[in-house]
Image 1 (tube, one colour):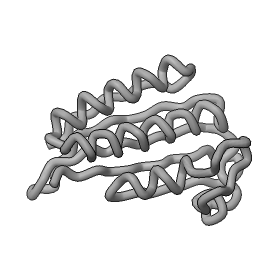
Image 2: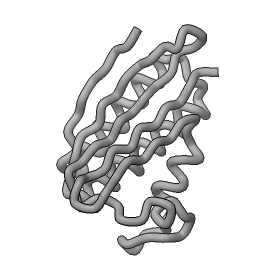
Image 3: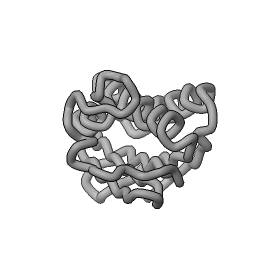
Length: 133
């Protein structure tokens, strides 16, 4: 069983909508309050990154079931400049935007599965999954 929803990320108000949709889906999946907060925080960071670094993008929010448990899978995609050095981008404290440099690495720690695909000039696809316990 898979249920999905796609949302654009073109403005700060879209980032807020992404957070709201992710929170609703996290409740539907049965995530604990702590896990809801973790996945909403990760979603907020990744949506903001798409907006700030790529000028926008989109997210697909999916409720997934692996036969044992339900989960929430989020796929953030953009057609921005891409990430030239993924290991460096995932290093705590590294930033090109003047922030704390915890967006990608922090998001990775907040979810159960994290996959980042990117290349210069080809955009970025980040897929994260949080499983109900």
